[in-house]
Every structure is written in structure tokens, then in C-alpha cells.
Image 1: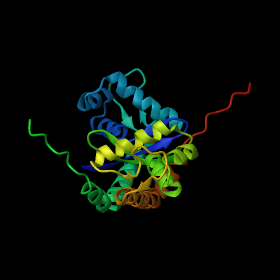
Image 2 (image 1 turned 45 degrees about the vertical axis):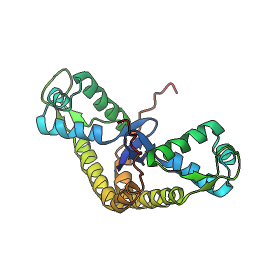
Image 3 (image 1 turned 180 degrees about the vertical axis):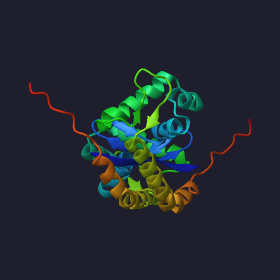
Image 4 (image 1 turned 30 degrees about the vertical axis):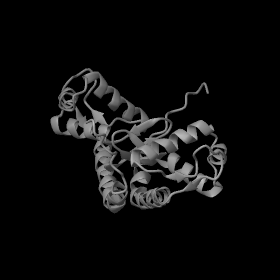
Length: 117
Length: 117
């Protein structure tokens, strides 16, 4: 089974893929970094780091209200824009790539099972 | 500056992105793994490993004529199909993502230069 993965690459070394976008979505839904982290099974520290990387890459925050507080986090316009644009790219990409992925997946030859198994 | 990266993910753990596709293209053009490796600035061993990973992932070869020989490599139909489909996906993706990437790139705030510099 072949699937397509995509991410935004921001120089010099930030990648925004489905993981960070999902985190933004969860923060937007819950209004809390710690709640979002819990939902996604990551530590608060890890979630904060991912958000920090995005803030640094854009030179402006993707989330507000986080300084010195565990709650009250809110997406900025930029944070919302990243989600919307990423998801739109993703949807168009999947539509365009669908037939190609199906055709390539069909080329995979399943390994022969040994008689011992 | 934001760009989009994409790769095909084949379970359990093979990724085919622009690097492997470029390698296939160079083997196709030169008819030789070692010439392709040289062009791409990688060792023969590394090029061979990347090809081996693709062969394993599909359960069939992407290149023929390589056993015990440094020259005479040729793409199989599968090898050619991977190139064609990947490049077509890429082209459609870039078209679809272009406006989004331009808009997000415009959101990057350049870091302020210190007066000392």
C-alpha cells in the first residue's frame, strides 16, 4: 500500500507536515496546549517545542496567550491560515495523486510465504 | 521561502522522494549505476542501497542487468513507471499548491538585524 506524504519546508530547517497541522487544529479546538498534547499523546513540552519551531520559522506567533499559562491558548490568524492552506493543498494533492498511487500500489508483489509459516 | 516536499510512503518503511526518482532518471540516462552515482555525488554503494530498497518495497526490480556488473543497468517498466507517475504527481501538486505557498511565504517576517552587524 502506497500513500503520499507531504510537508511544507521553511528554510533553513522547519518542516510543517500533518503532525504540526494536527496540533494546531487540536489547540484551536480545545483552547489549550496541554489538552491538545494529551489528545495527540505527546508531552506538553514536545507540543510547545513544535509550536515554538513554527513561531520561529514565521517570525511571528501561530498561537497567542501561551506565555506563562497552561490554558487560554488561541490560534492567531496565521495559525488558522496554515491549517486552511495545508488542508486545501492536501485535498487537491490526494485527488491528483489518487490514480497514480492506486496504479503503483497494484505493482507491489506480495512476498511469497514460506511453507514453514 | 516555503516550498513543498512530497514522497511516496510504502509500508513498512520505504520512502520514495525526489532523491530516489532522480537516481532512477540518471540510471536510465546513463545506463550505469556508477555513472548515476557519480553525477549525483553519492557512492556506488549508496546508490545501490537506494535501488535495493525500492526493489524490496515493490517485491520486483526497478533496474535490470545489475547483478555482478558495474555497467549495463537498465530501468524496468516499473522503474520507468515510478518516474513518470512521481513527476506527474509533482507537477500537479506544484500547480495546486503554488498560490498557497506564495501566500504563506509572504507571512514570514524577516528577523530584525541588530545594529552591530
